[in-house]
Image 1 (cartoon, helix red, strand yellow):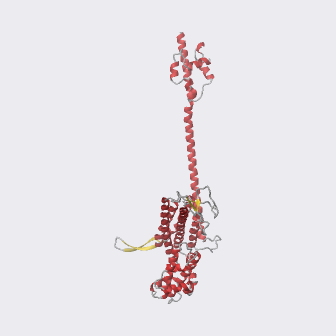
Image 2: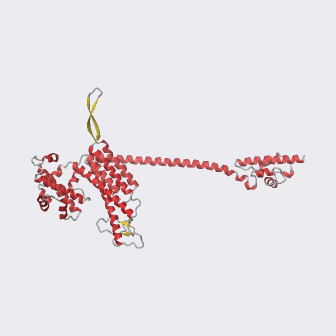
Image 3: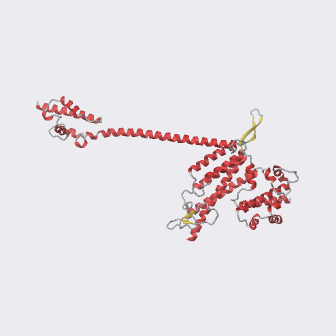
Length: 491
């Protein structure tokens, strides 16, 4: 009987322990009252009462008197793995679930923020489109009184101002700011979209099934836009690519305002070469003390050659578009009566007295000292050229410039005025080739201001700003070569 009571007592304790384990597994610990209620269901055994703290600890540790103590210890119920260490496994899974929900919410909030940013960008683009459309209709006359310029001049001014905004402060060989690059692409796409609706109609014959021939008119982009606009877009992308290629470079630029004639940089690895020119606002490039590496020089030469070719292509397109523009009547009325008086006696005698005219030799003899003198000479030569062309067609009373262009093919090639006009044209071309940075002549400015053709306005302004950017890139590369040669010679 005593053995039976001992076994029943041990069984009761095991049930209490299993219940306690279940409670621990649920994540909470049993209260003393709960243990007392379980102990009341067990027959009273003074030696094994669970109300005793010593017997409870004794039963959970390695006991030699109980036959059930060893299996309990083998299942991890010893003091090294107490039930207090079990709940974290459960709570860690719950925490992971909570963290997962938080990450989902955070991801959702990030997506909401991206959506809001996208909507804000769309709203900004819409406002920009409204502004462009309003200026286009008003002709840049915000009073609305109808005194604004025409649509062609508005678009030309918009492209010019956009170029000044994006590239006006960029005077270095470095990648364009991403924001400015996006601004340039976005607004140029908007301004150039007008060309998608400038078309011309061509006739095409179509035979029906019954043999009847019909003439069908089909629209296509106007020929000058179809040829020149894709070329200008390609030149634009190539210029941006040239600037992007200077992200990793061996040279750098001196800080703004830190370069002066008496500035010293002792203790610095930089070497600054002061240029003796009037362009003080252009940043001065700096090179390492030993100069540029041969790889960097080869890269600069390649990009300079590319920019040179782009400059020539843009200049050719710009000259072609300007040549196709109508000469305003105001310019024709302001032409001098004598081309000889406009161009000067010495130049006139040289052009008239030589059979084989060499414009480069004449320009060398003139020894032009500044860009201002070159621009004055270009204006006078151009005015004389159109004066002599008008005189070659003087047999028609007061001919317009359109009639002059039609009659030029019927002019006697041996006529003195025609010969002088041809020589003046070759001299003007040589002058523009020698001074590519030359500003627009009076005739070019007058054509742009009085132009009414929207397509020609877009092509002229687009090619003009690309021509200026290509020329600037070539000049910046030459500045780097100048500093590199100066440092190398000093070494």
